[in-house]
Length: 220
Image (cartoon, rainbow, N blue to C red; front, side, top):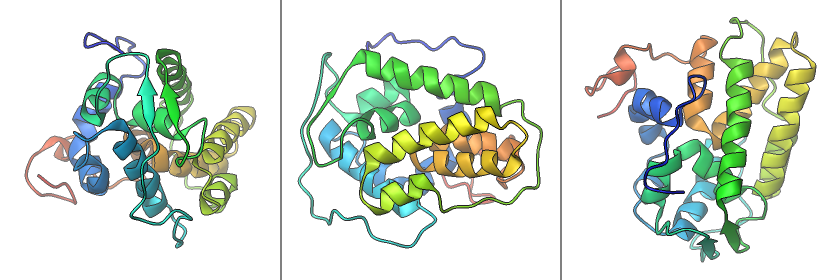
C-alpha cells in the first residue's frame, strides 16, 4: 500500500476500469464517492449500506443509521478512503473493507489482504473477459443475497467466492455466470460493469461511457 503502487498486468487493471467506467459508477454509488475523503471506518460503513441499496432485493439492512463506524487500522500510512481508492481502486477497497469480519466489528487491513483480493479479481477477469455473450436469465436470489439480508457482509463475500468456484466448475452454465456477475456488481462495480457490458447487459458503449456530457445515463 504505497504511493507508487502500480498495476501492470495486461489482463486486469483496476485503474483502467475506473477511467473507463468512472462516470457511470460514481453516479450509481454517489453515497460512497461523496464520502471518499473521510476515514476508512466511515467509508466502510458507507460501503455496507451502499451494497444493500444496490441489492436487487427490497429490504433494509439490519444495521440502522446513524451507525457508529467500527475502527479500521492498517499496517501502512493509509489515512482515508481517497488514498486507498487511489492506490488500489474501488473494487479491491470494497472487498478488503467488507470481507473477513462483520461491518460492526473492528478491522485490521493488511497489504497481503489487498493483494489477495487483487489476485482473486484477476482470476475473475481471466474467466469472464473472454466469455462469449449469452442470453441466459439469472436468479437474483442466491446465497450472496441471503447473507446480505442477514447483515453478514463478510459471509456474503465468502459466498461470492464460492459462487465463482461453481462458475469455474460449470463453464457451460451461462445463467450461473450471469448471476455471479450481478452479485459481483454489488461489491465490485467496476470489473462487474465491464464484464456485464461484454455480455450485452449494460447500455453504455465504450465510446460514450468516457464522455463528460450527460448521455445514456452517464453523469458529469
